Image (cartoon, rainbow, N blue to C red; front, side, top):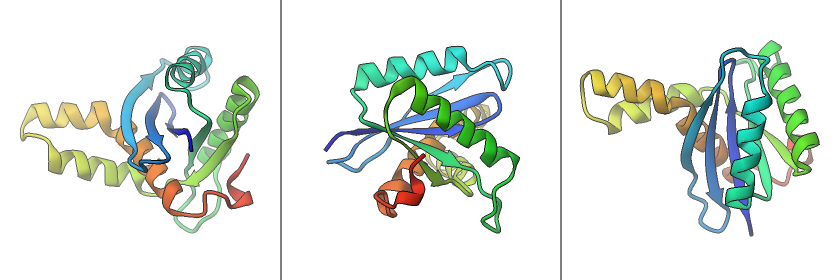
Length: 151
């Protein structure tokens, strides 16, 4: 068994979560922010640092499918990001359907944090990392060895 890094790739953020596959409990780690969508150098460097620090053996990237299951521009960008990760890290990178994970993450945070402005700020700060944890949770629960999920 080993560790998985879950990533929720977005235009200006990447939510990061970690899971020890023997425990099967994904934990949100952080949200990596960048100024522009295509400025990935610092993002990729931070992910590599996390891989080294946590001794990750594989990566799971959320695949933002359309509600009908088709792939659009966002899915294409997530696949491109996953391909960059494969080339840079040499680790296996798997794709996991992430439909509605951000909605579920927001709901979870709103239900589990105090009310008021603090709550709204916390949601904004943590939604991507919690979404990454939900992506990992889904991956661990559904066909992780299914060949169609690997990049």
